Image (tube, rainbow, N blue to C red; front, side, top):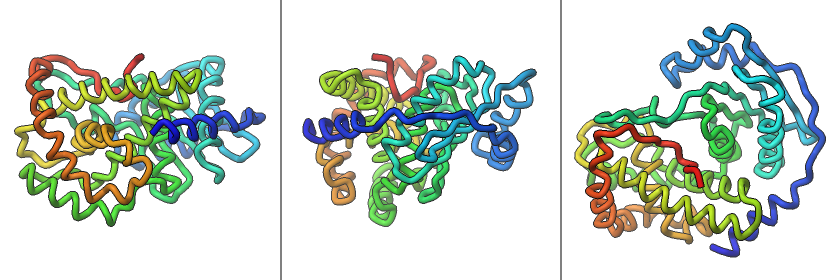
Length: 299
């Protein structure tokens, strides 16, 4: 695992700081994509319509990666984050990717006595193989962009391998999970890449990743406390994002051979189940509290 992290860090250090130029923002696509998709129940469209003087800005670098954003913040505030995003996109993909960002201040907050759903955690989407990524929260925007780029550039585990494993989980849990169980690996990989990309040194990557492990364990307990006895079918990737991701996070071999490991996911979950139940009991009080579901916990 240490060598794998070192390779990721070295790869990022080799990415040159490319020239970036401002381009005309694709306002029509930002408006139409928000209204054509029911990804958030119309919240993003409503937010855009509420802005008295929205900022639209586009930026592109020499490799063809570009970003189009609508925001209630100024260009001066947005520009450093957009430049950083373009740098990370260049690290992640040789093929140009377009990032659409609705920069709304909508946090991942789970109210007390509520089971988590799409409005509490989802923040973006991408179509596998299509070089476009879409992010519709300000919170964790760059991490979500990384996650969606993994989808866009087909770096996920193979869905056909996940399908039979999904059946085993659904049988054991007694309910339907969201069909995209492979999201557990996508999110895990995105969080590792985020730890690398936000670190100041190789040693800092290790520190940040250790923190991410502790944070994910806490979140697994908080989420499990809410969903362990649920019989309702999932409406989004709650189990994959917070519970199964934590299980895989404890297994470094997942990064070295992700597709090969898919058949072991259920056995690993069963092995981790006693600890998970303990975590659920430890965090049972959080069921009556408001809980942040942000995945990049502050260090």
